[in-house]
Structures are given as C-alpha cells and as structure tokens.
Image 1 (cartoon, helix red, strand yellow):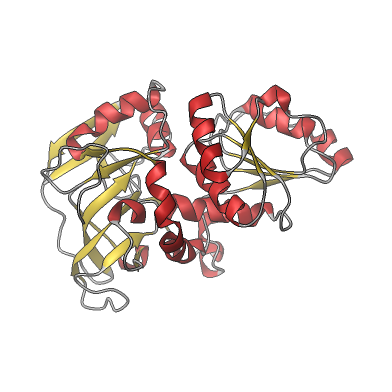
Image 2 (image 1 turned 90 degrees about the vertical axis):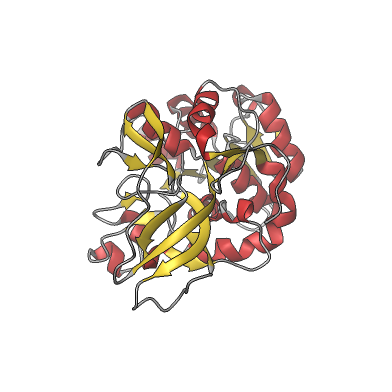
Length: 341
C-alpha cells in the first residue's frame, strides 16, 4: 500500500509498504480516507524534535473506516466511520488514571510513537478511535483532532461569556479557536503577519485584524497564542491588562521569554495547553453544526503522492489557506473540488 514515512529530519518519502498487520486484542485497522497536515508535522520534519522511531508513517489528524477489529473490541465494529484520538497513552500513570492523558508521563503521538494516518490503512489501539457522527464528510472528520485542541485551549483560557479575545496566529488552530469563540459570543481580534490569511479568518468569524504593535496596552484581558514565537508571547505579556490570562498553544523554541516579576505584579495567568483532554467526543459532535463553515478552511485537497511537495509549500510560506487535506484513497488527483463521499 502507499504511505508517507518520515525517515529522519528533512527526509519524508512516499513509499509502497506492506499493509498493516491484522489487529490483535484491543486493536483495530482503519482504512484511512482523509487526513490533515498539521503544524506539528511540519515542525517534526524540520527539526526532528519528536522522532522516536524510524521510519514512521506520519500523520495524526485523520479519519477512516474500520476494516478489521480485535475480538474484544465492542465500541466500534467493521464498517464504522471513526475519528481518531492522536494521543498515544501509557494508561497506567497517575495522569492517565485521573483522565488527564494530555500530560501522560509517557505521552507520545500517533505518527511518531506508532505509525500514523498518511497511508491507505493503519492499525491502532482500539481506545484511539471513536465512532464518527453521521452525515459529516470525511474531509471535515479529519479536522476533529485540531478542533478538540482548540476547544481544550478555550476551556483552559476560561474567558467569561462574551469577553473579547485576542488570537495570535491564523493557522488552522488559531482559525478554529476564533470560530469556536465567535460562536460562543466572543468578539475576536486576530493578529497574524500573513495579511491574506488573517483577512480570510476575520471574514469567517466577523472579527477584526490588528498588527502586533497595534495592540494597545491594557486593551485586552484574554488571549490565545498559537504561534509559539517568543516575541509574540513577550508582547502579549507586556500589553495584556492586569488579571489577564494567556492560553499558550504554539510550539516554538524552548527559551526564556517571560519576566516573572511582571506576572506577579500584574497577576497575569499563563495557561499551557497541550493537545486535549476529554474534548474529542464533543469536537466530533460539533462537526455537525460546523460542517457548513469548514469548507472555507480547506486550502486544497491532495493525494498521498503529493504530500512531500505540500510540506515544501507550507514551509516556504506559499500556502495562504488554512488546512491541506490528504485524500488517501488511490487514485485521487487532488484539486479544490470536493469529491463525492
């Protein structure tokens, strides 16, 4: 079968490999239909930061249909369409036992710790799949995972109903955060260096766009930071109002950027947001009501063979849209038009 595998930093290959092994007890095999390219996929490709096995089939945002299941699997069955929990958990540490798998002591992710979804099929732990909502197209089901990340960030932020929000970064996560926030009655201000992308998101959520230096001191109390850029984080901390909260999602360099004295004197809260907790099921259900808006998020649809080239365009900053969807059923020749599902 066809698969896209990461061999080393900067070494991504489209290859014909053996189909996944038949599922054992507690496992399922998923015939993958659609997958999404995530910023963390690109980060791992550029830096090798999370390469723990090589080669590994990339991809943790995907959906598909159960084609085989272990005898003890009861919550899904062959023929079910599913959404996928990207977290690879130990299930035994205190965090896992307490339902905080996003901070599992041995946390890994599908596509890194085990093979992922940039392939025609993959075998997974059965606990990593949930039955998908009906009447939602595959291209939208592939967005369940980033939608759960966005929902988790807003929960961590804890902004009061109707409070204005600043969202820095208009990539897929920032855009989904803005969409969810606007649906909950928050007025959203967007900050992104890519003017076309920020204008696109602002149009989707009836938000406004500002440059970073246009954020007035004390003009906001709640922000979601998705870029991971140290200067963006520093500026938010400097300009947020007293008793404000910043939810941090973006992955950047591990470097000191915060003045702890300012945090204390201004009572500023920083909330780290790693993946998601119990939000995936809710995100899946939300897709039904969001489906009419999500096509505007899709920049293009591509076949598996085109993934390395798409990585290059993303890294070069040549993609103005929000999400690239991979259609994993061969043959498919890509394009903006959406195929029948």
